[in-house]
Length: 115
Ligand code: AMP
Image 1: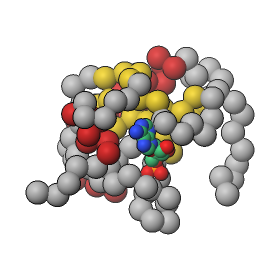
Image 2: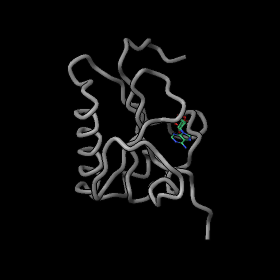
Image 3: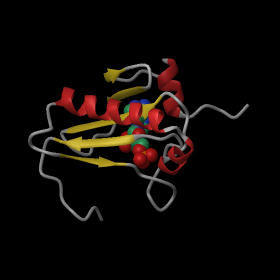
Image 4: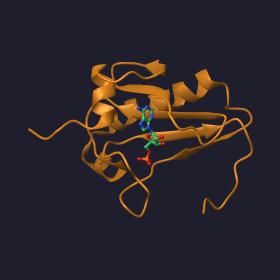
């Protein structure tokens, strides 16, 4: 069996994480190396390696994941000021953990382009 990724271990509770939101479909927790005052990751409980693999999911499954991201944004109280959502994907996208995750970044004005 392939070894588990870091984020699967967080879902299983084998590695601790500071949780922001959790439901049947997804888990949100603070990034260990924050790039903004608010930096949270949202991962689905159903395995996907990256954003492109979402095309194999049902619309309902994708909606549940998006809903968890929305709920997390509400809990973080960053909706009014604004925020950035990022799905780093693959080598060129700078993805370092091979398990789908959305970065939610906020709490300050973010520069663009991202370098
Ligand atoms: P990416 O580069 O898009 O794959 O993002 C992976 C993110 O996971 C990085 O922002 C890391 O800081 C974050 N990270 C790595 N290990 C942990 C951990 N144990 N708990 C929370 N976040 C982590």
